[in-house]
Figure 1: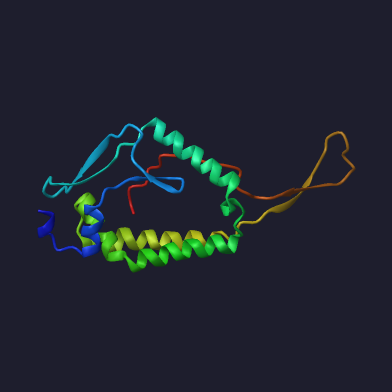
Figure 2 (figure 1 turned 90 degrees about the vertical axis):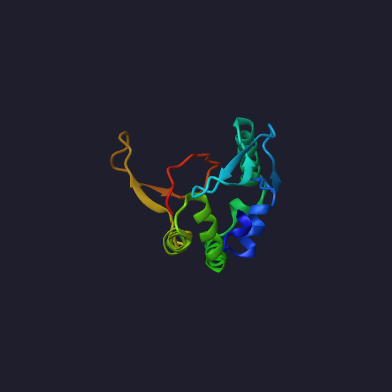
Length: 175
């Protein structure tokens, strides 16, 4: 049935390849070797399989993220470079918007037209908006008072910086 769908060759190629999880710098299977099938909601046809991540896989991902934070240049990338990377991702999504829309259509049954103008475009807009914040986050200087020295003047400096790894499951189902 997949061969009958009017989709881009790139979309078809994506669906036909063996899908893995990205953990650190590597594409990997689930530690258990288990997979989950994903189906076309319109037909029930199995479109492919993805690794069935479990706690061990999440732990590996957190360790890899922590190592990347501590040992790679990423945590020291300047704000302008972070902004440019997010803009680049948005540009790539815009370039591949039709393929992303087709994948989203097959994922949830929404029309590819709606997925492209809503889901994909809103995700691109969101990335570009957030990219702008990379150069806008700044610290502050505050005057502090000390109860035991009421007549003295003190200043505190607040610097906003990343402090570590966060793993979260978020309620993000649109876009």
